Amino acid sequence: MWLMTPVGFFSVVRKAVDIQGKTLTVRARVREDLEALKTEYLPELGEIQESAVNDYRFRAVAPQEAVAQAMARLVNDLDYDNFKNAVAKRQGQGRADVYHDVWSVLYGLQRTAAPVKRRVRQSAP
Image (tube, rainbow, N blue to C red):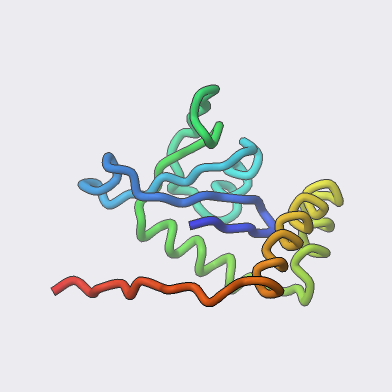
């Protein structure tokens, strides 16, 4: 799951090593994004690891339920009517410009996209 938030951009995944411990791996391109997430919303986030070879340079692990609660707090704290302006205020215009570029590419989907066949997720028995 990709999450663009006023505190940073995150990729949240469940790696094979996360399954048994019911954790999720939270990845970021920028260390400060994970630090802000930990400080403001997810104190349960583990030590931030850095790798020069992985797709996402920075990552840390947290209990899945704690990640869910952190995301709920992010939603509950939502107090803006324009996301990119909120990002500019909090993280600077440079980050807002990057998010605008992403917005612009995704905007192309609504202008040219053919209907997408969606797979229905099956519930566990």
